[in-house]
Image 1: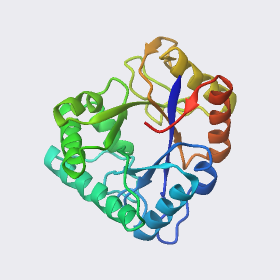
Image 2: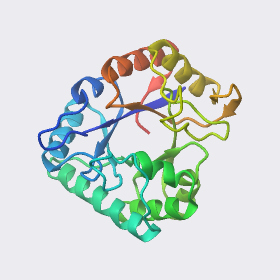
Image 3: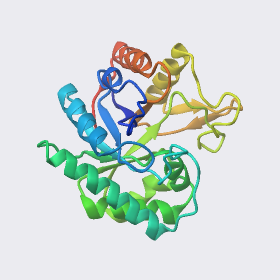
Image 4: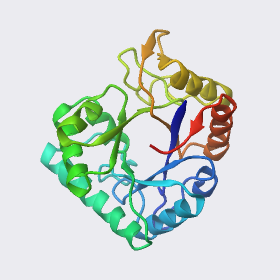
Length: 250
């Protein structure tokens, strides 16, 4: 068996430093680098690309809503056209910064509220897929397992990686439980590792109400801004490898 382990990184900007990117990138296989809208700035983007290259980690863009104050986790009313433009803009910016260092992007994963909105809205998901395909049709689109983001890739002609979140609680319909819901974020390392193993080997997760929800997992996420993210990433990689599961970018 094989799984990708991805992390959201490069989320510092200006005078503000967030996350342990160096520590996290030592354990994951794919890096989702913020592109300046919800977090990140040109200097941080450049430095994070260099760090990922040094660690041998696959590079991807992490476009979000233009909301630094809310870290891109507050929903905004945007049209599909607006979403398509902002995703193309951000992916193109990171692609240029990567190219300046002799590297190229491998994937795109929308961030936060944009990701969750596209997991419900087919028109928005299609717009994101169109933007990715227009910038580079070889890119892999990451999306929540079973969501419109996964289905939209067919019309755009993209490859896709179905994503699962071992550190997040699930609703019975397969969506992520809202962060304000009690128990929405799983913090115990042993529990996160056990959930990750179940997602890979059983292709299922237990929802917040106890119902078993089937899912497809090509990639698992580690949130880089979570306290102790580097240690969690190490534990996840060790647990997967101990179960003879290869950790490799899609």
